[in-house]
Amino acid sequence: MKIFLADDDQVICKGLSKVITSFGNEFEVVGAASNGEDALEFLLHHQCDVLITDIKMPVMDGVELIAAIREQGLSLKIIVLSGFDDYYYI
Image (cartoon, rainbow, N blue to C red; front, top):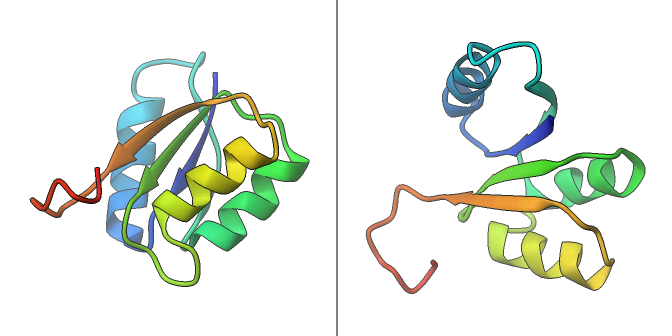
């Protein structure tokens, strides 16, 4: 399973990557981006099964990223992370 991470916090990306790869060789973190625009560019050119994205990011936030992914017709599962307790974002 190919997993891509989109989060502007490098510590979270490194931690997620470590946890994901600890589950076994069938899980591969294929890349990471610190904003939605860079994430979308990667996803348009690489096959991924899962996107794990933060909601609040610079340039293009997670909500905009999800909308762009759907608009482009990309088929992948999306997991949304947020440190905010304001459920408006979710």
